[in-house]
Image (cartoon, rainbow, N blue to C red):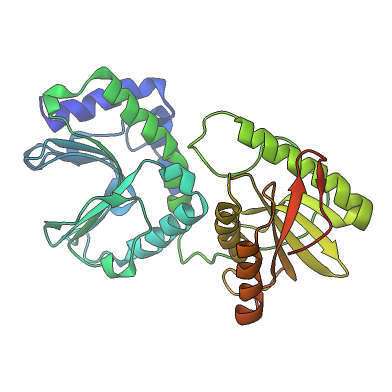
Length: 345
C-alpha cells in the first residue's frame, strides 16, 4: 500500500460522511462555475514519493492533509497550512489572513480541537508535538508547514477500518473550521458586541466542553443553582434586569448578569469540590468576560459556589480588590436551602 491507496480509500468511504459534499462546499465558497472534482483527493494532490496528500485545490487554502511521517510510522490526519513558494505561488502572504481567521476560530471554539495536536516543519526541521494551539506570527514565513490534527502510531499496512472511520469523523468535525477560514479574508477583529437581553435561558449549561459527552450530575446541579439564583434575583431587581447565559459576543456566555442602575454585575457559578478551585476557575473567565480585549463591562464580578467561604479565600479576594483594584467578590449558595446568601465576601 501507498499514501495513494489510503487517499483513495478515504475518497471511497467519504460517501457516508459530510465530507462527501466537500468539493461542492468549495465550489460555493469560491463562486466557481463548475465542480473541481467529486473527490477529496485527486492524483494531482497525492505525492507518493513524499508520503503525503492534501485535498484537491488545497494548495492556496487551509488544507485537509494526510501523511506518513519519516521512519516513525506515524499517520497524521487533520488540517494544515503549506507556506512554501513555487513558480505558480510566488508568495505565501495571502495565507496570513486565513491563518488569523483560523486563530480566531480556535480561540472561540477550543472544544473543536480537544485531543488534537500541533506541530510544524520550518526549513525542513520538525518541531515537537504540542497540544493544539494558535499559530504564531513568527511561523508565517516561507518554507514553513504547519499542521493541526491527530495521528496514529501505525504503518500503512496497520491501518484498520476503524482508523479510516476516525479520520473521516474528524474531517467532518473540521468542516466548520474550513468553511469559516475560507469564507472570508482579512484580519479578524475579536469584537464582543455586548447587548443585554433579560430572561432565563433554561436547559443544559453552555460550558464549552467535549470532555463530557452527556449531561452529568454536576451539570444538573450547576443548572439548578442558576435557575434558583435567577428566580431570587428577579425578585430583587425585576425580571427586566436579570439574564442567564448572556452572550457577550464571540460565543462567550456569562452564567448570570444583573443590570443595576445602568451598570452590570457578572456572576460565574462553579461546582468544584473546593472554594480555591472554584475561585481559580471562575476568576479567569470573569476577567475575560469583563475586560477582553480592552473593555470594562461589569462593575462587580461575583464568584458563586456551594462551598462556604474560608478565611484564606477572604484574604485573597480582599488583596485582589485592594492591591489590584479588581471588583471581585464571593457569594455563597446554600444547596440545602436553595438560596444565594446576601453577603458578599
